[in-house]
Image (cartoon, rainbow, N blue to C red; front, side, top):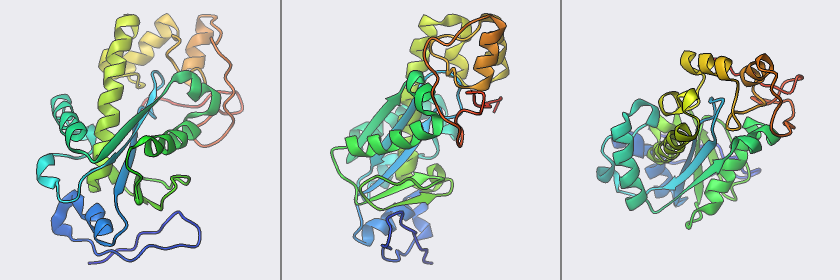
Length: 255
């Protein structure tokens, strides 16, 4: 059964690859490889929905036909911590190329989470030793890779290279958040990893935000006002998708 991949490159459409469903989450990238459009890179992020800590974006190119080496590879969010750590070791050892980009809270406050995410994806692809012939992203189109790209719905579940990128990003970010817990133990970063859980929200209201929180987010700004705190940096992100609102904050309630 065939499927058409719509390229984000203006005025150009790739050949129509044939997807073999029996190949599981390797089917899409294998089809693109067979069409002569490889190497195929997957890109994904971790921490977009968090209100503290960095955004981490990863890119990964897996070797064609290497699927047996990656048993259990899927969206990092459905894997246990032990499974993610195991796969992270396999990916960093076996991948043709990979990279991770860490975008700190101050950059998110300056340009907004959506722009930071797009920029992080471009940087992650650019930093790999191998320039991809095609890029798969998770959920929405991104331009500026220097190669054709396609947005894949639930890409971290259906495309192995995107799943690999999600594992790289998630493990990298979780390690950072555990380190931040040592510096700021009152927030419990080692447990919720900076996401807006009930526990994190309660601690944020009790103690006010830290420098590692995203001060352009509405729940962080609200907690700061409760404690009479001012942002430690300029918040200059502009209105837009997932970015600051007219009050220079973004609504980022519990997920």
